[in-house]
Length: 175
Image (cartoon, rainbow, N blue to C red; front, side):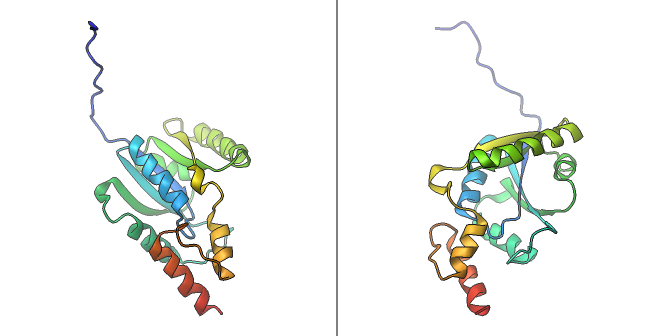
């Protein structure tokens, strides 16, 4: 039997993390990272980036809707928002202590590491937390999903059912 009292941290404020991405569309890999982020943080803000260098298939409103539909029972633990500008500034102003980044392979790490160092240089109060993508999702990306769906491939199980349906609608309309 130990003479030590167990450490119980004081919970004075909720821990918040931001998980950024274009989510065009949201995949099961994204959902895996978000759910795992919720085991580490009290709240995750899913920040949909408006990346001008990319031509998204889905509008920002469509992406926000698909993400919200992917988490119907999370209540206030998940917020979905858009971000334009420096992510680290956005995270800081939202009270986030961390930015969550998913890594699929070693090739992701080099870029993400440089980005994390730059963010740390800009705002020392915001950490970057890297989470490895679950093994069953390691091969997927939004780009691969869109390409497969565009050519009639079955992407069910790789994206939520409602996203699978939106992809079918989008590509049937464009044929």
